[in-house]
Length: 306
Image (tube, rainbow, N blue to C red; front, side, top):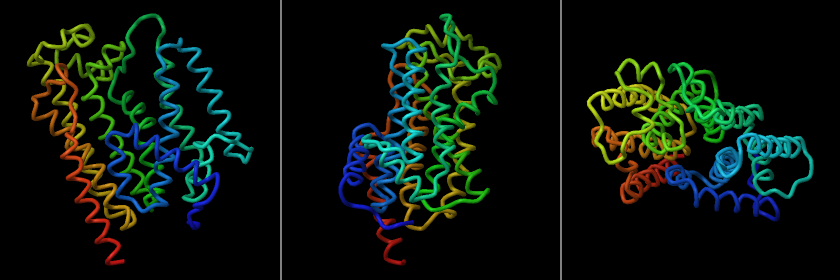
């Protein structure tokens, strides 16, 4: 890792990425704060990159084909910048530096954009976007979440097959948590990420998920369906515990904060008996700050012991 460049254009680029992360990363940013400056800059750059791609794909004011065109053009400009072309885009500048500084393979970022684009590949006939099996959903979760984990562990200071597999599975835990939290919001956008095979197993129709009254409490069958997804997520959270000792000591508090906040979100969904329809589950700011303070104390201890 080279010394951090704190001057000129690159410093401004990283500052712009930190501003995006601070504004948009409701859960992630608490973990970013617990990182040393160079690693924090890099992770904010990657987050800003993800945010831009996601915003382009999710701009529902535009037809899907137009969103795809804009996303492809954005990706082409990034690939030119990554290859060394001049660019004034602060996100491209910061991400290019971060990938070089932390030896992040560029194909990983391409996979991340491919995951974002999956929603644009679904049927455009008015039929809902769905996934038939958990294996199908796993591929989506891998691209939009696990790939982020594979990038992050390089910034955190780890590599190797074992760490990569655990980072992949930790990403699956996070994305399954997001899917549970966002069932109602996704249904309003004609998307159901709960696998159709799981709906059939629990006797829940696709139409019931898409068109239920938000104020109606979940049925017993819906609770059982959502509980099965939560159990899967809990299994994958075990991988996060195993990943923690495999990354650099000074990065462990940040990973601990991130996992703790996301796992707390899942626990809140479980304690609400899976009523994710009436209101969107979230971790209170006070609880996130308390988790962050513990993480900062852990960071201080890691620095003290070298």
